[in-house]
Length: 286
Image (cartoon, rainbow, N blue to C red):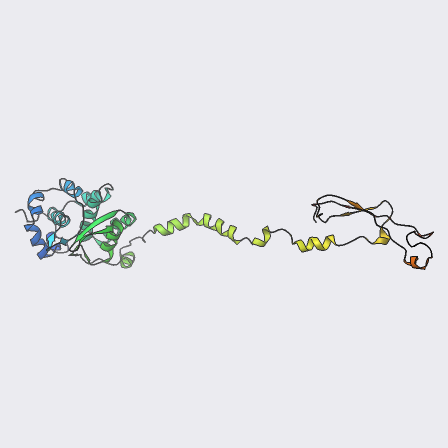
């Protein structure tokens, strides 16, 4: 009586729910000490306490011994809780092994449309899980476990029922497209990325100052001597090397000075001199 399915249980995929677990594994579960000591007379309410105590998932380990996770999974198949209770198991975020147990049961017993709608949101759960198998304990994650349930045919040493592809269900059953967390993140970061792209697209030559060669070419131009008059001042805008302003006086000599006899150091009579005051203001560059 302890190994029989609860009275009034519905058939799943045209067979007894317990038959979803392979016969060889099912027979070893019936002989396991954990099944005889802890799984007897469990209900949909009391099985929660046993699921919280789990510390790993997996099928068989060592010498083909069933794990506690498989024993509780078979017990769920035996008592066949209501759908609302399984959904509550799945929504409990505090106990990850209870969630993993409910996800495994939902994958094996629910309709394909319900499987996608209930398990795909769990792909955002990145918590660690311990996986026990014949080689010992390994580390996995909740999202990897859920992805295996949705894509692989054998998980935890158990053959899963066939699952219709998602694209087929979108065309036939009206299953909505899978929401992508990556696309949502990219759409939310679009304004910031666009601003960063605009800032990077600015040419570095715009921030540079004017070429020094242009300022030097302007500072070399001089006022013609014929245009200079007494009292006029020429202001040079080229920077001074000494950093101080100064005035220089220069004399212009008439071209016919060489034809005049006398002392070359004295200007000839009738020839005037032109004084030009040049004042240089440092730091003013055009």
